[in-house]
Each structure stands twice: as structure tokens, then as C-alpha cells.
Image (cartoon, rainbow, N blue to C red):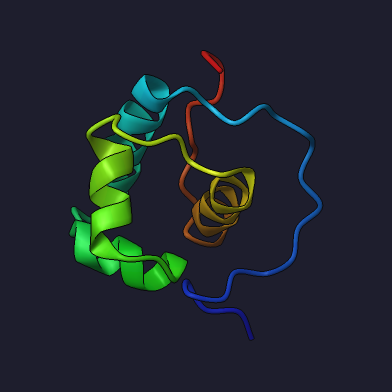
Length: 87
């Protein structure tokens, strides 16, 4: 059974990794839609450090394709729709 920290495998269509500014907006919206989870909770679920999530959310670093796809899978597992239209 899949859990939020181990989302089910879903074949995802290729979407380019968003710019740091778009990542910032997407992460903030994701955390709000996920029940206002903290950066620490998101970092734990994604298997990255809190500093990494903070850098993404403050547009200091670009999210890797692997992390972006993992976030997309987390969104699917939580029934959260990511706004990918502007990517």
C-alpha cells in the first residue's frame, strides 16, 4: 500500500522542470493544499533536507527533475492538483 512518503508508481508525461520562481509558487500552493504542512514535513516526505525545500521555495535553487516528478507523485497520492499550466 502506498503512503505519502512512498507514492504509487504512476507513469507521468514529460513536463519540463519549472523555473525557480514557478517552483516557489507551486510548492507554497502544494503545502497549503496538503493541509498547511511545514517545510520540514515536506522535506521528510520527499527525502530531502529542510534547507533544500527552503531554497526551492525561496527561488534560490532549481528543483531537479527527479524531485519534481516525486512532488508530482505526492500530489497524485494526496489528490492535490498541481497547477502545471504555466510551466
